Structure formats: C-alpha cells, structure tokens
Length: 385
Ligand code: GLA
Image (tube, rainbow, N blue to C red; front, side, top):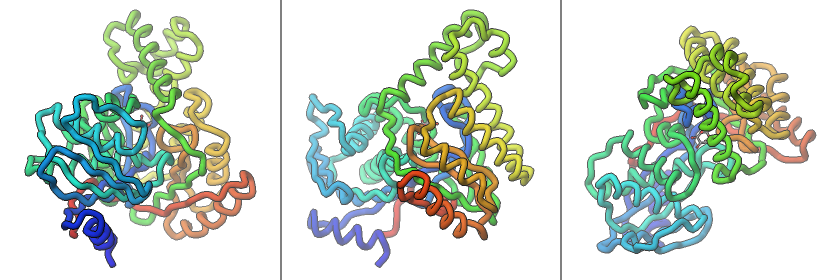
C-alpha cells in the first residue's frame, strides 16, 4: 500500500475519522553553512525524506498530537495562556501554530498524527520538516491562503521564540520551496531564491555519522553571538556593515587587529563561505563539478578549522569520501557537531560508494553509518490520500 494509505489507516484507527495528508521534506545543504543568520548565501536542496502529517479538524481549540516515531500522544489547548516549551517534538507543532496566530492566521484545533522519515538529530532538518508540514496542514485545514515565504518565516519564528534555537531561515525555506532535481541558491537577506538544476547523472549521497547533534545546544547560539560580536566591532570602523554579508575578505584582513582571534576566525569562515557559495553557483551553472567539489572541500576545512563546528567522525567521513571514485565533493552539512555529510557522487558510482563507505567508516569508528542515495525533491504539499 502507498505510504499515505498506511498513514490514513493508522489515523482512522486512532481517531475514528478520515484525515488529509501533507508532506514536507528534510534537506541537505550543498554549500553555505552558518551563513544564513549572517544575511548570506546558502545552497540547499530538499530531499525525498519527509515528515508526513495526517490531520483532521476538531471543533475545539485542542491539538491532539500523536507521533508514530515516539508512540506518544499529547493534548494541548491553543487557548491555554501558559503554553510553554516542553522540550519535546510537540514544541515544533505548537510553536508553529502560535507563530501563525501571531501573524493573524487563526487555526482550528486538530487531531494530528505525525510520522517522520527524516532521522532526528542528524542535521537533515527533521524539525523544520515537522514545522513546515504542520504549519501548511493547519493553514490548509483552516481554508487560509498559503504564502510559502510567510509560512517559512513563521516556522523559523517557532524555532527562535518557542523552541529556543536561534536558527536562520535556510531549513524552513527549503522545506517549503524545494524543487525536484534542483538546489536553490538563496539570498538570506532578500529572501529571493534561484533554482539551480542539478546534473542528471549525479546523486546526492548523505552519510550519517551516527553522532547526534542538537542545535538547541549552546554551541550554535554561541557561534551566532560570536558573529554578532564581530559585526559590532567591524561596524565601528566600517559603518556600512550591518551583517557579515557586508564584509569582504579584504576588509576583514585589513581590520583583523580590531577583532579577538576567535571572533576573527568565526568571521573569516562566514565571509569566505559567502564567496564560495557564489563561486559554487557559477561552477554548477557551467557544469564544472570538479570546481564545485573543490569548493565543498574548502567549505569543510573552514567549518572544521575556523568555525570549529565539525567533529572527528565528520572529518573521517569526509576524508574517506574524498578517496572514493566517482566523488566530486564531500563536506559536513547542517549545523555540525555530528549529523551528516553531503557527497556529490556520479550516479553510476553511488552504490559502490555506499558499500565501501559503510565498510571503511565502520572499521575506523565502530559505528555503522546510515547512507542515503537521494535526489532533490519538491517542497511541502498535500499528498493524495
Ligand atoms: C542549522 C540551522 C540553519 C543553519 C545551519 C547551518 O541547520 O537550522 O538555519 O544555520 O544550521 O548552516
């Protein structure tokens, strides 16, 4: 049976009524890491791993939430004035419902069954997929018009204000706007994106190190604060600077002395990464995958050495990948401190890549890695039920 058929049946068993089904994808980021919250450039693609939401209206203001992954039900009244973060997956749904209401979209109570295919804590944006799927479903159920950008911004607000992670816009944006067979070049200042076709004979291979990461953890918010610190210091000598997006590598070098060493390194990552994303877009458009791969490698080194968000397992995964045949490029993807690498691999080499990476990573680390051969997928949508 089709996956949404199975979900429909489960929903009917649980709630005794028929649902509508919605899906929002996770993502990989090809290049442009930790640039989104610096008004910079990113190049993510949505992937064919989804958060599936089955939903039906209730006549009250209760969200009755059930997760297949967690085998857990939670009831939340949207009118409860004391609604606060609980530190569990339901926060993503409740935070999104509240953020939508803050922009004037009144949603109704609903019975909701969630089934996530995006592995949790793996850097593939399982949380954005939940937010975007649930937000889209709640809007559609309420018969409200859906503006994908407003939806993505509301979901980011849910993370920032309700969940407590100061993430940028990349994950929610791509989960909403993803396009099959394309990456998006997104300018995180103007919030305009350009679809970039991915070559047909290349697969996106995602290798999960098996090391969990959490962006709600202090390190992510600390990096963000360090960037803000850098901007404040640089703006005192370069008044036109509002974000690290506005700083060129030459300016950063010129004013190196006005920054403490760690802040300088963090800024150098962001400033050089922004350049790399733009060069990578040119390389992709020119069909120059070798160049694209070099930029991925440089991005990884910068994240490892300057931004210090990699870890031993990610470094091993990238090092092993760069020795396989048919690989154009490899780097960590997402927030870091564990999670996944993204690899651009010639499609006819991808199964071989998968097998040897599994064997070699396991023998180096003792961890069995999940490896997914993926292609770029569409963003959030209502699925046929
Ligand atoms: C996480 C955040 C994104 C982005 C990346 C790093 O995925 O949710 O907004 O900052 O980390 O590029």
